[in-house]
Length: 184
Image (cartoon, one colour):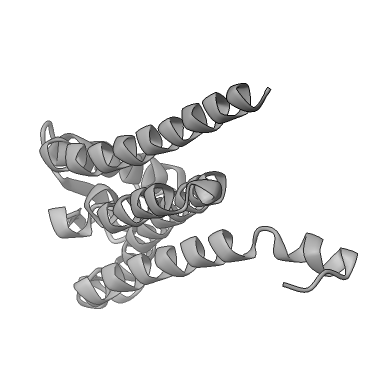
């Protein structure tokens, strides 16, 4: 009986180590795939802009620029530079999740939930940043849009993703503990 439990524990530890390695490999895999992932993100941005009624939202083949029309008939483009792409911004999140899973196997599920929430939040924030830049360009001109679509807002998006990761990782079980009156 005890041997079976140790075997199950060893398999579990091995599985969590494999999850940690898979997350680290995914982080390393992002780098060579960055141009493709960046193009996919630009295509999502074009679709979002088209839904938001920006005319002729297009992406040229193998491009990281989404072009769209403004209300005044002018066409402008927004480039998602590699350092602003969600794929590259996800690297620290993937590596932190891999480290948590490796060092604290019992927290694997919480780390994966936090990672998924943070990656989703990062993608959403980056797409909203592009949409906001387009709205500002349409209403107030391209100069203000260029200010919003800057490295500062990229850092803000990453910062929000990190906060979301920490919040989900540390806060998922707190309401249940508070409801039962447990202290920890």
